[in-house]
Image 1: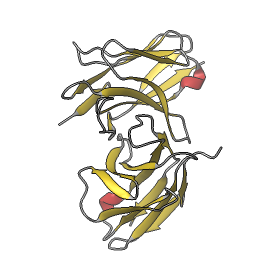
Image 2: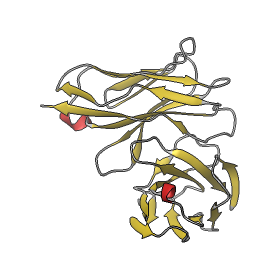
Image 3: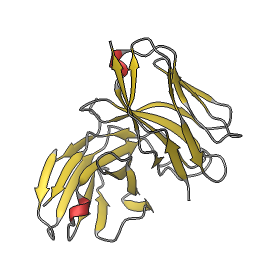
Length: 113
Length: 115
């Protein structure tokens, strides 16, 4: 049973560019959440998707957007990259929207130069 | 807003020592509380949880009790092993009866266990 998978593993981008990160949830899960984890910090909630809609959003600017597909996989898009966007981006899935247990992927390390 | 405060690390212990990592929270109502662990080179894993006051979560020898009166959820283990070396995160989300599952995290506490 595959767990949560994320791609790519690492990414280097230049300021001002755009990036797309991808996530496939654990089998049987239909809800996906995205988190940003800066070095030495705890994760910060970006947003959560369920039934292809954004259900909750954290304190992130509109440059951060997402999408969920009918197969429950998800994308995180970040436009106009800033140096401060350099972080580990974590995807977590849960069995349903109301489930409190979240399963995390290994993350995508984004470096903005 | 809701927040989680956990003790700063790094914590360094000898094998078989007793472990306590303090965690306190600020939240309205009765949040759900969690401890996650991040082993070197691996993703975050749920270690244990508690969803109402006085609940005790336990797993792999770790325990934490939901204390509403002190707004705390301290992590304990009676005898740590080298394999417990990891970063431990305390987190909270909305009450189990609601639909707020956004996790709010502490900064993490790094634990190193020496043989």
